[in-house]
Amino acid sequence: MHGAASPDPFHSRLMIGRPELALIGATLLWGGTFLIVHQAMRHSGPLFFVGLRFGTAALIALPLALPALRGVTAREWLAGGMIGLGIFASYSLQTWGLRSIPSSTSAFITAAYVPLVPIFQWLILRRPPRLASWVGVALAFVGLLLIAAPQEGLSLGKGEALTLISTLPIALEIIFISLWAGRVNVARVTLIQLMTASILAFASMGPAGEAVPPFSWVVILSACGLGLMSAVIQLVMNWAQQSVSATRATLIYTGEPVWAGLIGWIAGDRLPATALLGGALVVAAMIVSEIRFGKD
Image (cartoon, rainbow, N blue to C red; front, side, top):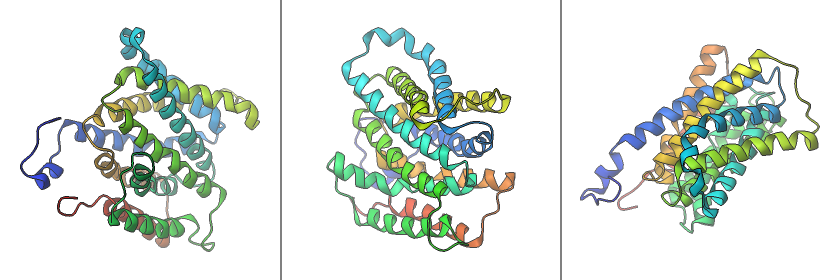
């Protein structure tokens, strides 16, 4: 499946193997994290929570990477460090935004990273985006305006703005994973990136003026549970994207805001009709941006 050429490119694009199924499962887990973080932000600052979350994830990933740690290379330190930096920036901004906006709103805004992936592929990997990618960007922009402040005019509040900015490092994370896919050890790089994200979050607390919160079982259980989920998600992404392209993986990730929105709705989130329309446009943008025509 990794190297054989298919006589039917269209059939090849439709084929769903174990890597794709693994990414679908990771997307379902990913969608469930928004509501948990939103609830935890009532008891903790964002940087402490992100540090604890990914510190727990690193401890969980440690047994898998420990047997191979002696063989770590400079390339793997670089790859893990760059991916970890992207994780730290994206999750810190997203978590900060979740202090003031509903989990469903956060999920739909976060989904705007999808049309950005082809643009970053152009800038970093020198693969120019197709027309469908530009159409996806336009749809996502209109959708974000409708989601952000449907009852207060077309403007971004602080939570929406922070979440929107977080889409940049999310897209870069996916590009970095694809950039080093197949050239590094998955377990070692996963451990390095999780450690990097945790260390950067804890180290940023002082400069940001964030204090360690009072002890809370909500924070501990949420961070540890999300740590386990984060470890699984990052391992799956690093493993699956060795054989699944960044654009194909990104298309699979389009299910994330749908799951998050459904979970948020069950929990009581009630978005206005204009915000729901905006969410639909963002999902449409994700799908349109990954459409392939002919041999494209």
